Length: 96
Image 1 (cartoon, rainbow, N blue to C red):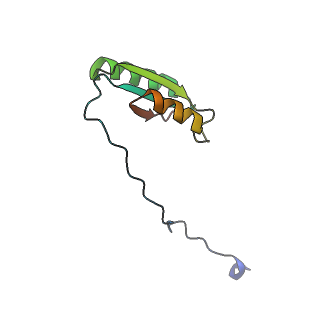
Image 2 (cartoon, one colour):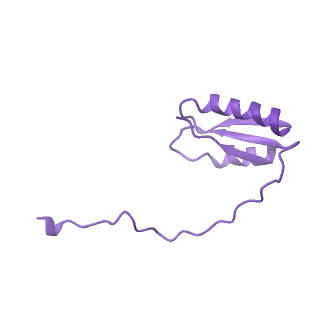
Image 3 (cartoon, rainbow, N blue to C red):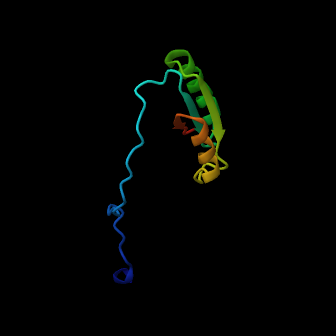
């Protein structure tokens, strides 16, 4: 019976196309930073603390906080497009 079972090697990786990283700013002073909450527990509290620190210590002009619909799904194209129009940099949160 065991001879009939197939074996899947979980260490085999598929070849994925590499995507170039977006340019990173050297400084956050006067930038608008977007914070994307993934809806996990305490994600919003973590991001609020990050927002306060960014403004106090790094001169961030404004913080835009947005929330995904559900943690296991990617953010919608509409949400990402709206954020891209409004912010210079985005940080995605991982709650506990």
